[in-house]
Image (cartoon, rainbow, N blue to C red; front, side, top):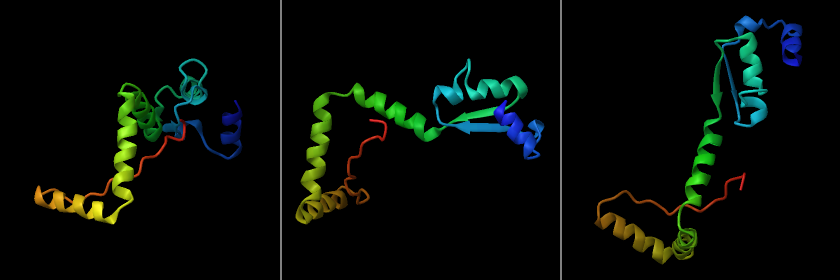
Length: 115
């Protein structure tokens, strides 16, 4: 009701609402009492979209959980090995050139903000 009254106060008709985008929290996207469900009570055709970045982060987090634990340690060691030496980086670039691939740097590992 607060959203409806604010929209009415601002002169926005509910019939002008086509879609709604939000993060994936149950408060916003829940099927029972989430905002999207309450909005659908008034606008059955409303288009809702989950946050793609948040969905990808959740998928990535789940995927990482099923990987062997030593893999994270290996990737950290590999990143450190190349990032601490320009000679090693040049060697990596030379190997990439020999095998005919684009020269790529090894990216730094980062944590998901939700971790």
